[in-house]
Amino acid sequence: MKLLKTAVKNAVLESMERILHEHKDELLLANQKDLAAFNKDDQALYDRLVVDDKKVGQMIQAVKEVRLQEDPVNKEISKKHLENGLEITNKTAPFGTIMIIYESRPDVTVEAAVLAFKANNKILLKGGKEAYYSNKALVKFWHMALDEHNLGKDYIQFLEMDRTQTQAFLKNPDQPLDLIVPRGGERLIAFVKEHAKCAVLVSGRGNNFLYVHPEADWQMTKKVIINAKTHKISACNALDKILLDINLPDYEGKIQELARLLKEHQVSLVVDEKVSKSLPNEERIKENSIWQEEFLSMKCVIGSVANLEEAVVLINENSGGHSAAIMTSNNQVAQEFMDAVDCAAVYQNASTRFTDGGQMGVGAELAISTDKLHHRGPLGLKQLVTNKYYILGNGQIRN
Image 1 (tube, helix red, strand yellow):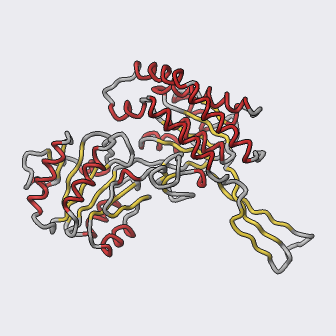
Image 2 (cartoon, rainbow, N blue to C red; image 1 turned 90 degrees about the vertical axis):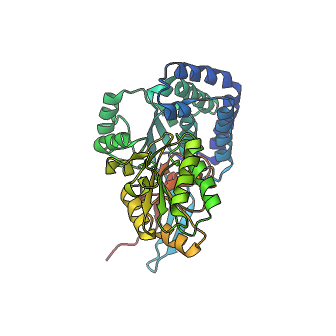
Image 3 (cartoon, rainbow, N blue to C red; image 1 turned 30 degrees about the vertical axis):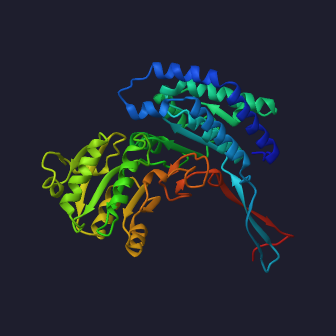
């Protein structure tokens, strides 16, 4: 793929910022069509679908922030001069063509495209049918920006496919395909992994845990839990499981206080056998599979553990590998926890809601990767490149 000059890419992005501003009303009208056709029973998905003035402003800001970031392509990673005279340089290079499959969230249509384009990739956008009109409008805006600078529309493509057509495309794409990012639930991820013929980078489910250690600051703990659980239930970085150490001072009193606080915030509770002794009126865990469930709702499990090691085992066996937190004033214990927990982001004394490209200083993100290759955590601009070796010689042959 031809490498575009940074100035050209930035000019396209500047045009997109202007077009988003000038055509805001057109986008809002398209979004109203999507909202009118949506079943509001799924509150989490509905929340992700909404586009308003604030969201348009965030889209514009996301494009601007990527435009102002350094171009990640063709950067030297390493350079070596070998004894045989070969000069070997390793540089960053575009992936090529990236496909992203996602539900709802029209802002992904902006963030995914701006990141892929600035990193000199083509991107295929397969959004959900619930955001059809919003996504069509946004892709139209992208094509307007590309056309202003005499670039082909194939850099940013909108795929209008149903499930059967998507399956067929994954098995036999009609163009080169280098990477697929399924951004959704486990069913979507399994579907893509089953049928894809190229690399798949998983943007995994949340199902995030928080462990309350005996040396936790209780007032801080309550504040963090409420934020992580209730701030935005539709986010993959929301909290679903709370583990209280049985050695916590006034263990029973704290469980009861936490339960009251969560219920004041309209959070329904499910508790394990140990906790149910302190909260006899709350629903008991019926199936252990609930420990692996991502709720995306005002629902939370409260469980008990005997120590740090038990908390780590429970988290590693059940979490989505996204985010986990420990509440403790003991820094050594916190370090042990963060080293042992197998998640993309681990926290001491802070809400899991910060696992987000913008909040972590990465900027706009394509997804939160829970894979370990080639990158884990927020997939920002710098993560949307691979590498290539350039070897310069003067006739060397291998003996």
